[in-house]
Length: 65
Image 1: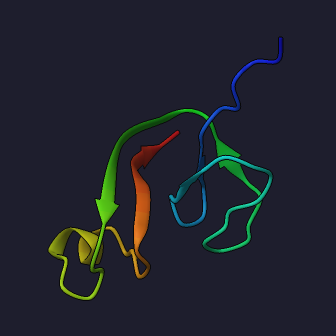
Image 2 (image 1 turned 120 degrees about the vertical axis):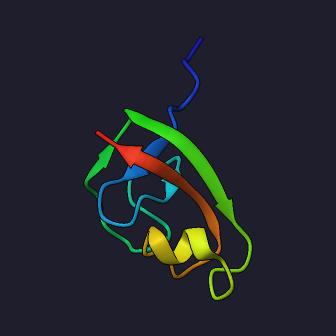
Image 3 (image 1 turned 90 degrees about the vertical axis):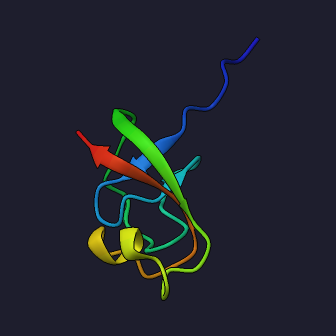
């Protein structure tokens, strides 16, 4: 039985995803080690998204290692 695919955090934009390349920015450097997560619904109005430099809707890691 195959193991469950691990969720990764993009080291470029911090987007969380499962796969080979980030669906938000297309970059491949990633880490399976990250802390916390935040879901951004409206990046234009979100103070947290502004602080984290997030410009797209989605789920992101708070800190990557």
